[in-house]
Image (tube, rainbow over all chains, first blue to last red; front, side, top):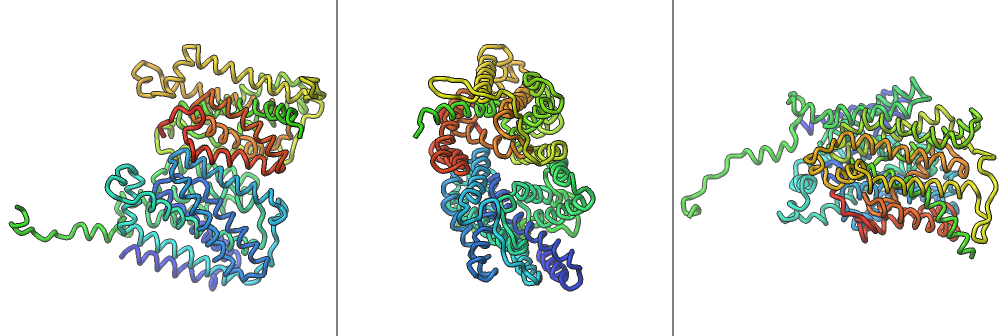
Length: 325
Length: 287
């Protein structure tokens, strides 16, 4: 219940920004939503299923290019984003089937390499992608429609994660994270679940990639497949709390604000400072803000898996003596 | 098609990859850490070399001696200040940490050296006639030094007492501790050694390739492909895979162009991951 209130209130407050905030606030929030969607998608596969995914930016970039090419062919930006989401799923399905068979460092390097392959292809097939020059799109005049689409995706992902956190599916994913062999032995269809989660975690990044291209009205390989996007996303999830409902949201907001401050104060060494901030998070806050707050049990912090906890604490109907025999 | 010429070019390139990848593999072996910053140590090495030769007007061999020491110190600092605390934790932490360190190194390098490309004109210029081919002197020297050092380190691992300690920590850390080996000391030395090898690779490629702060992203990540193909934790595997991938990249570049040629390394890596995850000569590392 508490969780639902938090989701509705934060979504409502965020929706007010275009009406009360400045142009700057609007464009800051657009970028924040992009990262919220990325962070929640990463949380599905990295936080819940426990696969260290270092290639999410591949889907972001492929989505950005798919969307940009569709828009240049005359498709409306909203349809282009949907098309990009489909392209992400279509890429993730075979890739997940292949890559999820390897674990740990192998999966991490494999996906990292995959993102680099996609970047090389974007550079190499310059007949289609214009190579390093990049693709230019018609600039958007009004940011508001874009804002609300991203708002819907971002808070859609939050709501989805809240549902997942309170479901059998979520518990099954956590079981895979803790011990995949044991989960398999308990009858959880690990392969199917992992691939499904992987595909689900690829759709939003691809769609958001296309929307980001719309926002910039430009895309090139360095922007689409930036390792910095990957690093920031994962750091946001870590800072907020991996495998929690609100962790990615908290992490994304805190990290975006910190990054924005650093950017305005120290533009020359901004990226190095972001690296240092991430290092500090890894060293000093590895369990995340939300997990920290949960341990302290502050009243406004919702417990994880609240509905399931209520279910489990229900008094069990007493067994009849017959059944005992 | 000039098969023989391409083959030689590929082997010469592979020698540099061997030096780079063996360092990365050593670090992975004893620490179970994938060092994303390895390539950036290489970039720092290359750029420092340019500064030493064109800025300070010192001879090239000074860089061969000084730069590996410098990157070793840098690597040791990374290890002592950051990675030591994360080595036994979840893998995601150390991965993120080295990724962040890589970002810091790249951007500090941009601050120090600027974002542009820097070459070393006149160093090891000219070519030698070898096996009926004209081979650029800079490439030949780079190959010979890289292979010599790679083999020297292999000898060190196989035949010295400390080398045996490194291998035992790599293969069975618990047993190593029981036998009185100081894991911390082994890890520090190995990390410094790996960083020195990256730095030396940087020195050696500076005369041939244009160096810039992003060099690590372009060059260093090929070392990942090499250690996956050769087998994580396997030293001879990395050497063999480096030569193989060097040849493959040169042929791929000849057929499909430079960009797709480098992408081919990763495609080969992905295939190996799927077909034989422990690599050609891998020891079946426990993740």
